[in-house]
Every structure is written in structure tokens, then in C-alpha cells.
Length: 231
Image (cartoon, rainbow, N blue to C red):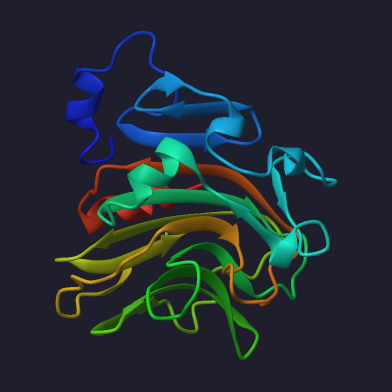
């Protein structure tokens, strides 16, 4: 059992949709979408429903030849949950291209690099590492599993990551150990947008990635992240 979800399961209602304890949930493979356990439509949570199952694999197809800069925005109540900047997220994706390096998920002010949170598959000397970057005008925090080669295989991968103003950022990939940055408090990260793929003001590559599942939870302790990222 993942710590932090036990209490949520105790009060879970029989009609709830999605994982126990989820604040927001999107399964682009099975077509299950929920906010606080209540079913919603895909069009309630993203602005690119036409890209679900648009490629050769199941999931939300992120491809910069199909969307502007390879971006699908999160909207509505799903976006509202993310804008608290205090959560644990689980992201499962499929990568068919070994050479892909770039954004999987990001948050920003929609216009500048001054307020951004990025989750990437980072290419460091051909070692493809989980990377989380959190920056505001006053502070920058980086959780980078440097040299781990954790995301090399052309396969389904799962990331679990934490973000809060007070406790920093942390990330785990495919059940591996957590990498974290507990730098000083980040109190002025003013984001208004959240998206899969590239940042809205950047043309960085985000092609050939399939987002399979994305879930937002109330923030858990970092000890829960390897269990949440395990395949």
C-alpha cells in the first residue's frame, strides 16, 4: 500500500472513478477521466481530444507535426488541481523513438521562462535521465537523476514526482530511487498553464510521445514515489 492513500481509500465511495485518493485522473488508454472521483469527459480536461489514439499506439499522441510545438493543454478543473503547486503526480508514457529528448509535462505562465516547471527525458551523453526543473525569479530547483540511464528503453515508462513550495521537488522513474532538491522555499512560481509536450513559447522537440496515464494526488512523502512509479 502506498503511504498517503490509505486514508483516502477508507472514505472512497463505491461510485468513485479512477485511483483511490486521486484529485484528478486521465487514462488515455482506457478512456477513464475523473475529477475528485467523479467521471468527466476527455474534452473537460484537455484541449486536444482529437489526438487521443491518433498515432500507432494507444494514448494521447504528442507530435509536433500535429499540434503547435507538440502541445496539448490541460484545462478546467484538472488545471485547477495542478495550479495549487502542491501535489504528487504519476505520469505513464510510451516512447517509440530512442533519440527523443524533451518535455513530457510542463507548467508555465504561458509567455516566459521566469515561471516554469518542467518534467523531461533529458539526454546527457546518451544517458536518458528523468529530470524535473522548477524555476521562478527568486529560486531554481532541479531534481535530476544524472547518468542513471533510467529512461533508455523504447518502452512504457512511469514517473512519479512531487512538488511543493516548502519541501522542494523530487522524482522517481520506473521504481528507482528518488532524486530530490530541497532548495529554499519557492513562493513566487506564478503559473497559469499546464500541458503535455513543449512549453507554449518554445519550439523544443516533443514529437512521438504517447501519454498513457496522468494522475494528480494530494502530496505524499518522497518514500511513496518509487512504489508509485513502479511498472
